Amino acid sequence: MAGSHSHGCCGHDHGVDELEGRWAPVAVAALLFVLGLVFYQPLHNTPFAIAEYAVLLPAYLISGGQVLTTAGRNLLKGRIFDENFLMTIATLGAIAIHELPEAVAVMLFFQIGELFQNYSVGRARRSIKALLAVRPDTANLQVDGAISTVSPDAVNVGDLIVVRPGEKVPLDGAVLEGKSLVDTSALTGESVPRTITPGKSVLAGMINQSGGLTVEVTKPFSESSIAKILDLVENASSKKAETEKFITRFARYYTPVVVLLSLAVALLPPLLIPGATQADWTYRALVLLVISCPCGLVISIPLGYFGGVGGAAKQGILVKGSTFLDALAQVKTVVFDKTGTLTQGTFQVTDVVTHNGLSQHQLLKLAAQVESQSNHPVAQSIRLAYGQAIETVDIKNYEEIAGHGIRAQVQGRTVLAGNDRLLHREQIPHDRCVVEGTVAHLAIDGEYSGHIVIADELKQDAAEAIAALHRQGVATAMLTGDNQSVADTIARRLGLDQYRAELLPEDKVDALEDFLQQAQQTNNKIAFVGDGINDAPVIARADVGIAMGGLGSDAAIETADVVIMTDAPSKVAEAIQIAQKTRRIVWQNIILAMVVKLLFIALGAIGVANLWEAVFADVGVALLAILNAGRVLKS
Image (cartoon, rainbow, N blue to C red):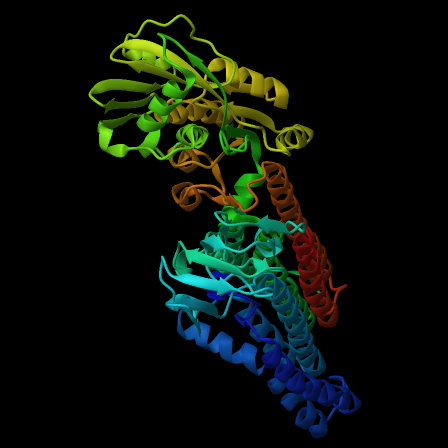
């Protein structure tokens, strides 16, 4: 039943103009309704007043026309048990027993409730669209010194664009010239502007505040950050949470049961109870039908999740669907990658220790040559420390050994650069296995030649991120390919509950499997937070995969269920908090609707509640549930 419409009880999704247009017929129907009450004659006052019908029937058709036609269409398609069907038989029954004003009231209040519901849904959508109004409309394309204004879709990778002060950055790219402050709040939720200088990256949707920038485009618009955010939020409802699926299944059985119960109320008491009149019990059955309409649930639950996704996006947390919000709310262990996730991922050489008579400059040059083709942060820091042009013609047979390091021939000599595992694998004698910090060991033609120590700073909010998760009762762990000594130091500084070190990429998946098996016994969920290409398999395997979206690799971001645009680990606790709030509000709505409905069903069955009260109960519950769902947007 719930599947027969998308937004609103009868399947409407109205824009503001259309909503304004729908107030007019409701106002006309309301005026006719008030006029009809003047002519209304109760059943025992005969003859029936023609004036009553002449006024109230048009009011009924104006206010209920859409419900009647939708019920008819659904009936032809074989979809009998929906709220339109309930409203139709309840009101036609009311007309049959000469309760014409109540039939009009049912339709009228239902329409007024619908208008408010659609207004609430529209407001939620507008607040998210306002958040996403950062979609750039034009780009200043620079070709041979001349600048032309084009659509961002028309700009290719490698083209140069100019972003003037006050303009939105239209595409992702690298800054070639200029210095400026940029407002990143639309993408990251951060209020403090970032300083951008040549060499730094900018993302579509950022607002250039102070200086002109010349940017080389690195991604087409369809793959830019803002395009992905738009797509994620707009399509967040496509992956439904278990709670939404439950309500759809529930409605499929609930409505036929209510119809059968109403039939029983209408038919059985007059047969079984002495003095019970058919008209009285038919009226009670009609009240039951109106009360039982599950509009509040059908609208407010998807709206609650939609609000949760939108509220998270405002904070720079992109959740790719309501199913992942539900999973986040159940996370009891968060497993972090180290480099680029808990640490800055910007390594700096702090020490060069030589062996076998080499000078520090010679060792650093050799390391820079071997690492010349690697994109690993350690390799980049060694090349930066060397600081000179590298002659790549001397380098042959370059080979990356996953999780260990690099082998290459430099001027005819076989050089190894990597971690302690690489030395043991290649059986190279060395006197120190444990060195404080991240280390690149070097060996030439099978002989140990020294090591380079590289430091990686913790992110500013890393310790607070772990503390915030602990306050939420969430356990924390770290998986890293780094050595035991570095991992132990970081785990102690951050207060992590546990860690595993010296892991190859495939070992990370195995380690996560252990956590998942432990979590299954308690029916809890595991989240993994990472940023690198080698994290993609682990992100995919976790119950909730979270990627760092600022510096993170495309593979990690594509695979993840949740993307954190600021690269701030503290956002993980925030995401869990928003998810828990969303889930709490959704269940509040379910319980509120059920309790009120059951109460009024009982009152209707014993004849205490009439049709008017039934409509107020139905519309009132729907509006309360929708207002409650709107609170999620303020996350």
